[in-house]
Image 1: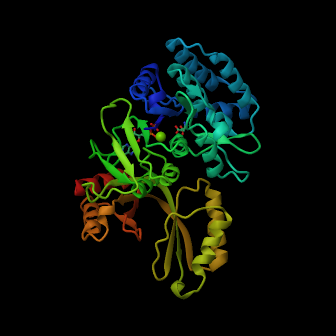
Image 2 (image 1 turned 45 degrees about the vertical axis):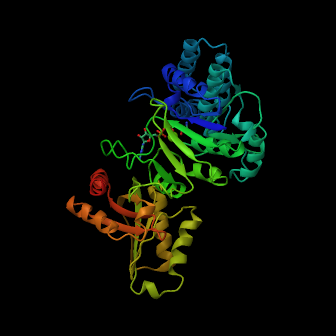
Length: 435
Ligand code: ADP
Ligand code: ASP
Ligand code: MG
């Protein structure tokens, strides 16, 4: 039996939590491969080490070298090594890190150092071997992840003697520079290692007892979910359920390795299993409700648009030229809405609107205010009457105006767009309609 265990930021935050991590790992000899995040928040308004590192890089860009942010990082790691009484020359690693940030030209190196330092500390605490992710997680020249090369390098660790600790979140480019995954990417590293060493299970240790039907910050004590399919997890995490990075599924899919979300602070809780299939599990109709704010809609109106061959292609090529991916395209006979996740830059949005005007000569084209998208997900809703009715009735009862509707063709999800100010109210109403 081989287990890969990834520990998230809260698990890495303090001496107490790392001691807890140590107990979990040492209680089971199968827990041979450990992937760690950078230290996260210790209390409400604490700052995650990754955010401090990004701030240190910003300081370097503005003033020529890292300033106060790096001192806060230094304090955290020096404090951990002192309290564990470690025989690790942490000052040398911190000096190297600071010099590296001062010499770097992209924020990725800085962002990656929280996991690097955290893994050095945890390896020392456990008496495990440290293996740098730069040596085994590889990207291609075009910046995409090199799955096969990486898999061969990780597989070579499979029969190593003793335990191994690997930093999450980053890898190396062919030119030797460090590149990170997107935020929350240590989950992806854990999945990559699980595939490479052919783990029996990928344990993802965090600060909650697994997946709840919805975000516990919005609905108090939401129902716990025992099992989810890979597809449901992807839908939910892509739409905002931040428990696990949506790309964590791809590496484990090959060998159908189960992911087990567990709570570092309640290790006896079985958590949530994420599986290739949840057939045989007695699960509710809806397995999750997730959402995110900040989506913009471009509304295009043109009489007889539906008969105009190539209309959609012309509109979409404008977005393609700007490298922007589209979330949803709800259409009417003479209208088309394009829902984008936040493009950030208002002038870019204006430019896109201008180019759409040039490309298809619409009657009107405008950007309408930001909306929140909410996905209601569950395999159970396929071929089942009344799910949509329940959702829309709940929103109607709560006086929430629905701005957009989309149902995936696999009937795995129904997505609604609502005013941002109605976001929490809408999630609460949908949750209570089903549970
Ligand atoms: P880690 O640092 O361990 O990677 P994250 O902060 O990335 O942890 O993810 C865990 C957090 O996800 C929880 O603390 C919780 O606030 C949040 N969360 C959002 N949606 C859900 C959900 N549906 N179920 C459980 N937790 C959720
Ligand atoms: N430390 C990184 C972040 O904060 C990666 C991770 O925690 O997974 O996004
Ligand atoms: Mg996370």
